[in-house]
Amino acid sequence: MSQIGLNDYWNPDELEETILSFEAIQEEINYKQAQDALQSLVNHLDLTLSEQTGLESELTHLTGMLEKLEQSVVQIAAFGMVGRGKSSVLNALLGQAIFETGPLHGVTQNVDTASWQLNPDETFEGVQRLALSGWGNSRIELIDTPGIDEIDGQTREALAHDMARQVDLILFIIAGDMTKVEYEALSQLREAGKPMILVFNKIDQYPEADRLAIYEKIRDDRVKELLSPDEIVMVAASPLVTEVIRDEGGNLKRQRKREKPQVEALKLKILEILHREGKSLVALNTMLYASEVNEHIVNRKLIIREEAANQLIQKAVMTKAVAIALNPVTVVDLLTGAVVDVAMILSLSRLYGMPMTQQTAIALLQKIGVSMGGISGSEFLASFGLSSLKGLLGLATPITGGVSLLPYFSVAITQGGVAGVSCYAIGQVTKLYLANGASWGPQGPKTVVKSILLSLDKTSILNRIKWELGDKLKQSKSK
Image 1 (tube, one colour):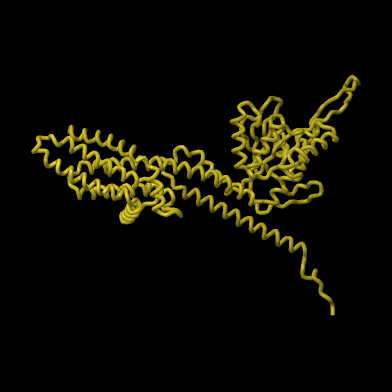
Image 2 (cartoon, one colour):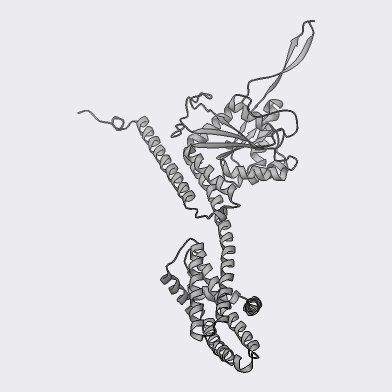
């Protein structure tokens, strides 16, 4: 009987192919999830037209991130000091002079972009092929940035760091031993958490022994805490060689000429990163940046809504104060105040994108009233007593020949002020409740209400209400 071995069932090549296919499927799943999540984020920003004002840049960034995912765009940006050859490195990768270069200080003044048609079938030192799984019709963008040490560098450095948060891979270009400025910039860019390649350019300008000494110094000392040796490559993007030629007169002379760029190591490193991390890299980086942008939008939205909410609350406060101050009937006073409170809650709920029914608003008002405890009871007793006194003074006006009008308005202003303070407190509690997504949080309503009441300067609020109310009552009296 023949013996059947494991190799009769197991083909290593087939197993590797199966594993790679599973990895590609997982990449596609991750990519689709990121795309769906970002689309949902864009569709549910819940911004009014007024809230969109001032957020145009952030909204443009979000839609740009979505387009980046839809078109499978991977972005690679070059950073570095002036004169290190950022543009030359990118041109060498492209195989043509797209980015402007020259001897002047800081040729690159703006962020420039070009598409790179990377050939994954290109052979590099015995490596036959690196398949970019799942890339299909994807596009690779190379981005050139201004030098980090240029004049007005603070603005350009901020621009460069903003780009670092958006891109998928960072190329940091140096041309010799690192300076302190370069190290600090590299450290800051490293905080972006993106894959990074430190590119030692212009190696053609150093004898071999010197270039290796500089490389080892950088690898073992300068960036030991920031980068691994595998993240450092040496290139000559625009190498110059000197040759001796004989002119027409037979004389020997030296002549310098450009040679073919030596960037194969960098191309291979980029291919390795794209092969290893694939579309998951783009999906992750896009979502990280989109999350930052969304957080800024949400914070801005909350600030705008809080400003609008405070204006709405102040309007409700004065409406309630005036209505109660001018109303001579006690029971109607209390009903009018409750109606204004409910209307304010309904308006705030619409402002925060969580509209309520009238019954829900009444239930919330009751819960707030119970949690407010003392202030609600004080308001009721003060309102009841002041309303009764105001009614007596109003009845006495014909008898006293109008003398009782002065104390009548004084009592009315005090009564309206007390009601206004209560309305202000209710508005602030409702605002916080809605800003937290219609939730009291783990502390519960009583604790939240108590903390807000303690933070209110009731005397200041009352004085402001009484001043505005007195002005309104004088106007109504003159009419």
